[in-house]
Amino acid sequence: MSIFEYNGSALVAMVGKNCFAIASDRRLGVQLQTIATDFKRIYKIHDRLFVGLSGLATDAQTLYQRLVFRHKLYQLREERDMKPETFASLVSAILYEKRFGPYICQPVIAGLGDEDKPFICTMDSIGAKELAKDFVVAGTASESLYGACEAMFKLDMEPEELFETVSQALLASIDRDCLSGWGGHVYVVTPTEIKERILKGRMD
Figure (cartoon, one colour):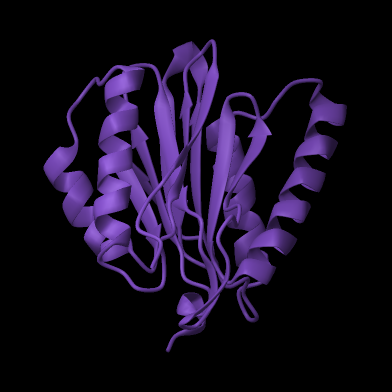
């Protein structure tokens, strides 16, 4: 078993019309043993920017603390919030800096940029970015997430339809992966509001 699969995870971000959704599962395991069923994988950087961290849970929490620290320094110096593209470059640089002993993490970054244009991106553990215009996935359930998202995604979805699509894709995928699951955690972000919802899934 790869070290990336040690705790299990499922992450997906999807774009809609001037909005985006980011969702994760809630299981924290040690290989096949479940430790917690309310684990947080998605973190808010500011009102228009979220990051999801799949991979090894300890590294994810350490990396999140470093990202918050760097973002606060940026806010103090620039007196504004970081744009999603800038934040993606920051995450990439932090990961690449540790390339010989990397953080065992695959981040998913989702945010609203200029003119409320959604931006999503994922990267590997040494910071190689992968940009997309529709959806990005990460974690142990990523293969089934690709299939579900590919089948369900439509262009320019409104926030409610986007929530339904990303939730169905997540629930269908985590049922096909024994290392992730136990419900879901979904954020739908528009220029004016953030909706956070907890999904109930199969509890096995």
